[in-house]
Length: 55
Image (cartoon, rainbow, N blue to C red):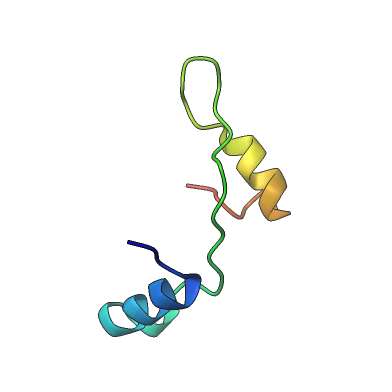
């Protein structure tokens, strides 16, 4: 089955509060280390903000 960013946003609008709905959806390969962990600092660079994916 294929899904589009618009489908995901529509689904989120039905099931989440308005402020929790994502503004944009990006499909891409996640940057990983040699041990298979996700490189969060690389995701922050891609998002263009150091606090974009801060937990």
